[in-house]
Length: 133
Image (cartoon, rainbow, N blue to C red; front, top):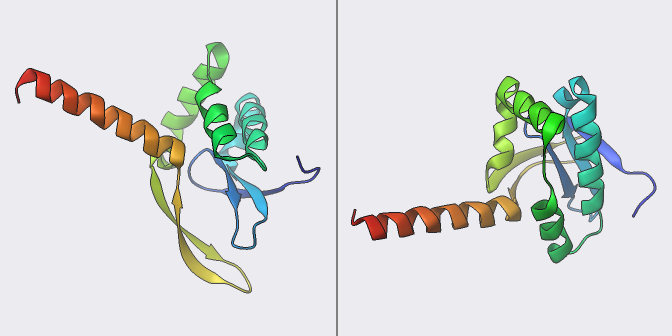
């Protein structure tokens, strides 16, 4: 794992570990998390585990993450007081990358959420099939 990681503050989602077009990894964090220090520390620890991880370790990290007790309360409060955080639940998202040298859009796939929504749709479809709709 790297010693220093660039952190970019954003206005949407919760947090994500991103690999840019040059292969450098950085973490995007919703700046509203600064108002929730306990949740921010937990989220940052989670995101740091994604650095330099392969696909299997990424999925394992996401599936093993859990929120309980006070942390769950903070998580729910954050999502309901910051509606832009719900964007984190999209399996596919568009991002504009704009800096002094570049200005382009990129499509990002959140593999964990893609797998999650496929499973949810499969369960709902199976329910409709069994229910005769």
